Amino acid sequence: MRTLYIHADFMEFEAKKPTPVAEEITEEQKKGRLEEVLVAFITVEKRDEGKIPFVVNEAATDLIETIEKTGAERVMLYPYAHLSSELSDPQTGKDLLKALEQELIERNVEVLRAPFGWYKAFRISCKGHPLSELSREIIGKEVAKEPIGEESFIVLTPSDDEFAPEEFSDGSECFQVMMQKEALKKEQPLAGEPKYLRLCRKFGIQWESMSDVGHMCFSPKGALIMDLVGDYSSKIVNDMGLAVYTVKGTNMFSVDEPAVKEHAALFGDRLYFIPGEKRDFIMRYAACHQQFAMMRNWNISYKQLPFGAFEVADAYRLEQSGETMLCFRTRRMNMPDLHVVCKNIQESEEWFKNLDSRIYEEAGKINRDYEMLVNFSSKEAYANHKGMMIDILRKHNKPALLHFYPEGINYYWTVNIEYHILDDMKRAREIGTVQIDIGNANRFGITYSDDKGQKVHPIILHTAVIGTIERYIYTLLDTAVQMESKGKVGTLPVWVNPEQVRFLTVSESHLPKAKEIADEVQAAGVRVGLDDRGETVGKKVREAKQDWVAYVVVIGDREVQSEVLSVYDRSANKNIEMNAKQLIDLVRQGIGDMPFRPMYLPRELSRRVDFSD
Image (cartoon, rainbow, N blue to C red; front, side, top):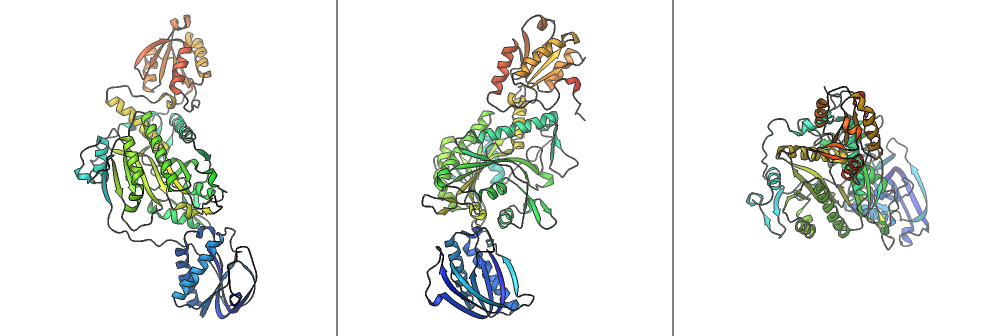
């Protein structure tokens, strides 16, 4: 709500002609005059929709404070649609002004309200002192409530049985570890360096010492992995039978924007604040701000729902410096944020279950499994969504740990699931997530037109199907580490391996043939390296294996004279004989329909810079 206050000797009006949205009034209500009056010219805005009690409370308090400062004796509320271009719907405007009038009366203020939706003539005599003309922006921020009680946990099983965490001994090792940490607050300290850090160094993923704590940098191999996973996150959301709008946005938002300020308040000291010349800003902590800022200006029909909005967004969270962890807990991350806009709760639950299925499917593709920590904003939210949760538990045939937030706080969400893996360090790590949001459409003024033409606030799902890009990479590296722990050769999926095939030469005379075959394989959409250095074959093979190249081919006299190649297959940890076409088919089969990008460093090893410290 925006308002202009004028302290006047008098203000009088006369309603002349109704507009199509005019309220019904009596002949007596068409005219009004007050003396020694504080006149409030009021524009009710779109962002006020659904927030009338909070706007009214803030506006009434401010009016009374201004009366006391100016010495005005009474108030006139005057609807005035010219202070903002973001007008609310007419009914909200009428309801808010009437509610404000009643609130002032209940606070013992003499008040007169001019009629809404009429063309009116008015005369005013402004007093002209320093406080006689004031402007206000009324946000209508919800008053924070004190939580009632404490957080609590239960275990819910597919058979609809509930257990206290300390009494539940079933479930996987991951579930037990997650339950011990979250519900029973027991977690063993880490001992020694996590094994996955060796792979981070191998692929050029490290902290940037010249930046703030928790900010990463990526050498070519790591950068390629990052971009491929980002491409894959986009492929996933566009492969779900949902109309998806991919957007790009800024990473900085003004805290002067009420919706931004309210939403940001939920994250407290985890925010990055950036002082500006005229306004202060926060760095975004997800894609929400940008997507919601766009959606509020979209003309959406119920016929177009549900749909998705997607961005791989750089997000910033001020994690504790002692808790930062390469790829897993960082202060700058890349969030493949999908928001699914739904008509109502029923549709949101159906898509919640669809997203849950896809989240599990993606974990299964890399031979991982999830356990669920389900957060509820209240016991009422649990009652409302319990049927959906039982469906999910029965589908996966596993229990879930339910976490209930303290009662009495009006969160913008009702339920969210955090999907945990058990990593090599025997820690439960959250990767994917999905959440039902019932508040931000209202907060940001996002509406759609229903089948009767009425404006309705949608329900919005938030999800990161594979988690942040960094956390998905963490999962890939941890999976490889666990392969090694089981006595296997650690591998990355072929599609994400920075170098899929490397050709090695026995001597310089074999280089033309190696280049010929490398050109053929590379032309087929394969990332190819060529070790053209004058090193021994043993050293070249050893370094190729150390670099985790998926397929290694030595070119010598036999290969020059025949079509047969001896190919070291890292995943099988053995040599296999095949020709160039069969090699192409084998690699392309490993890539499948996954994203592809060329290498981010020269093909020839003789031209590559040494990135090691």
